Image (cartoon, rainbow, N blue to C red):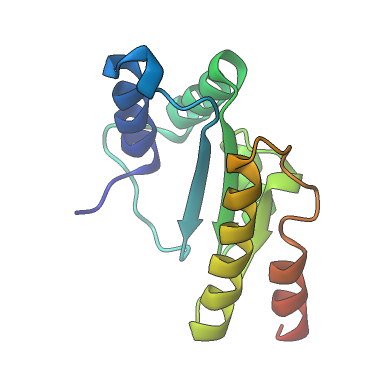
Length: 133
């Protein structure tokens, strides 16, 4: 099943909305990982997605990461309202994907411990990407 970014944000928002109060997570980290292929939604325009992301960040304190291959991830993330320090390029191959999963795993572990999202969360991904340009 494929879900657009807007659809996924809407879905997770509804899960939080209809969950028992004690079941709603204190922190939400939303990771967007894309291969850069066009997956245009017919329901959610990029402007609507940007508004959804801004709402979730401002109202509920959600954090968003944008990880992309074959695109300018910083520029694309900015288009969706995601800061440049929360976006990174990666190589969509076995090595690049392994580096991403390792970095995201560490980031999620720290996030679950209520630690602030580190500015160095993407350093290993950047290092791998730059070394193989």
